[in-house]
Structures are given as structure tokens and as C-alpha cells.
Image 1 (cartoon, rainbow, N blue to C red):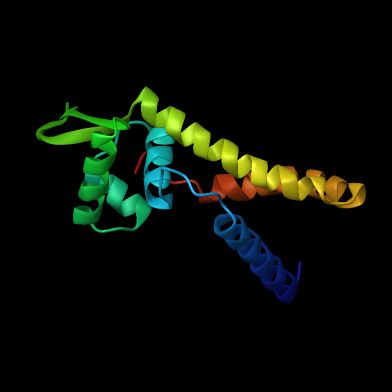
Image 2 (tube, one colour):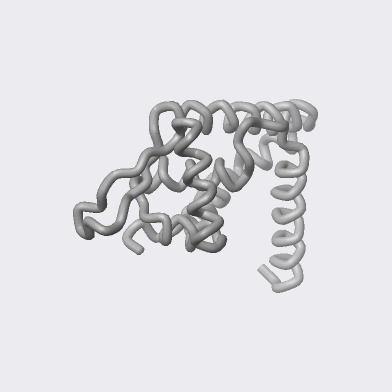
Length: 145
């Protein structure tokens, strides 16, 4: 694939992603909160420093977010078995439920858009699923980091 084709694909994927974010319904969880819960759901308990790094925010910002999520019952802290001075943050069942609710709303928006497409476009998108899944897997955070 030529560089100009890749650039056009990159621009299209960026615009698609931004349009989904822009059209996302209002929810109790902010994007930052949902992102943090998603990391905890996928990767398991994390230190606040690791969460801040993964979400590209300052440690004080992440501390504040974790405190808000903790007050909602969406996360809990426990002592880090490797370092008693540190704590690990983990998602609770309530946090997973809130995250799943947000995901269902997003899925509905995407499904509504897909329903408006002609069958030919749906088949083309379905054919691209393996490549898109591979693209996602290459951008997932390193669990061992």
C-alpha cells in the first residue's frame, strides 16, 4: 500500500473514531473514568502511577479520578503485595457494570450507523474485521509493563 493510501486510511480511521466519540451519549462516566475502568478491567489491579501513565495524565489527576471512582464504589484499593507502601487499584463489580452500560450505549450508536449502510458496505466492513482486530491488538498496552 502506498504512503498516500495509508495516509488517507489513517485520516479516515481518525475521523471515524472522533465521530463516535463526539456522538457518544452522555453517561455517568466521563471518558477518562471509562478509560481507567477499562484498563483495570482488561489488565487487572494497577498502581496509580501506572494508570496515570497509561491514560497520559498526571499522577495527581489520576489520584483525584481514583478517589471519585472509589466514592462511587467503582474501584477499590488494596495493599500492593510487592510494596506495602503502595496500593493497587482494582475495579469492582459495580464498576464493571457501569462500564458495560456505557459500552452498550456506544454499541447502539455504532449499530444504528451500520443499519443505515447498504449491504455492500456492510460486507466490506465485515471483511475488514480481522485487520481491524489486528490493528487494535498492536496498540493494546503491554500487560507486563
